[in-house]
Image 1 (tube, rainbow, N blue to C red):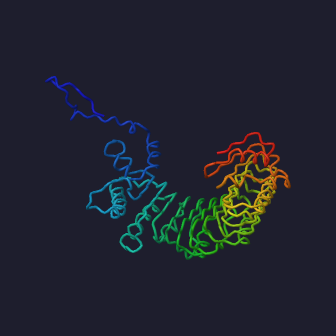
Image 2: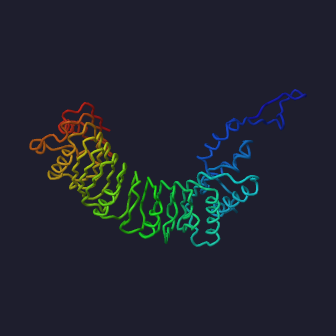
Length: 409
């Protein structure tokens, strides 16, 4: 901020061009400044070095590198933003190599997130290859790469220092298993690959703990994974019920499972270790859960023909999402049966598109027993405005007559 001082002529002038900048951030210890760096795109760190004295040295040695599309930065009209996306990291690494007098420090995290595709440019591809080679040489631990149709180079596939690898929209060709002895987290989002490359990649991760696959062009999944896996998420991918059942049975310490696969029909999940389970299906699905240590369940379905049978004595809470749009007596009867299979629960959340889904007609109430007679806490969320709140509340009290807290929103 500017400090006003009184000049000899009695006027107000600026001290030292009369500007003093109070650089409070620079007073922080190095490790805290580096921690701040970990949340910022690298371009902002470089720009801040112009006004924060300590940053002028620290930006050169930051272990956190994050390059993106400069979404909030305006350039001269003559400058193409796409060119800057490529040139800034290249110039940054050159400056870092020239200015560091000692051995370059290790890189904890390298992230590149761009919406541009450089697949048709050999020059651009070589530049990105050089960035990644620099990161690998400096023992990068976490690599997060989102570059459309960029082919992952050999340098990354041999990066033994990696503990986290996240790839999005890249082209993945893995002719043989890589060397990832320390990799614990693998995330593949919309990658262009094949089952052989996927199997080879996963085979090179002997201590993997978390695996996320989403929206890939792999066809039907067919891979095996190390028994060290604790968390598995499969979203918008093709798989068979039989393959899934076999995969889960071979994971003795799996604790978290997320399935968002619309071709699932009839699954049986048997796991003594599973604690958190999420199943999302837009179509009819039959699910049998034999999970004695399960404590949290999410089940979302778009068909009133769905059935879920649960053997989970330690289950504490279930979140159910019903995307039903039309209900008849058959639909209500099926819903009562589904809820009855969770009658042992004490806490539940129900989410609906239409309030009519949970307004059970009198004919159903007369011929069916209350499906949630042991429930104590119930929360209902409607994604559309409620117009029959009194009828809905009355129906819910029939559905869960022992409820102590009822919240409707």
